[in-house]
Image: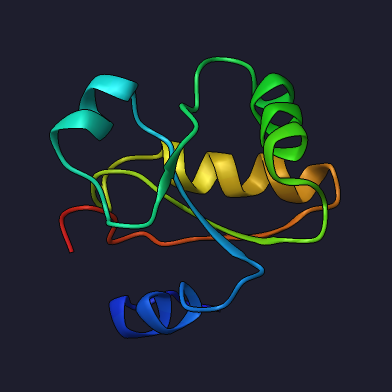
Length: 97
């Protein structure tokens, strides 16, 4: 599935969808998509994925995003979540879009 800004905005209205902003807390404080949560990507994919699971549970659909299409934290975060069996997709346009 390719995430577009219209699709993301529609999906964010659903209760079971969580928008994850994965850059640093400092970057999140400067600018973020309204309604998104900040869970920084960090350096360990397993720690990140388990933290998301602890915060939100296993029954949500996660949309990860970073600053823009050149930032690889968003796709890496979605991949890490999928590896532990969570449903996730990256929104490549991120903050910039």
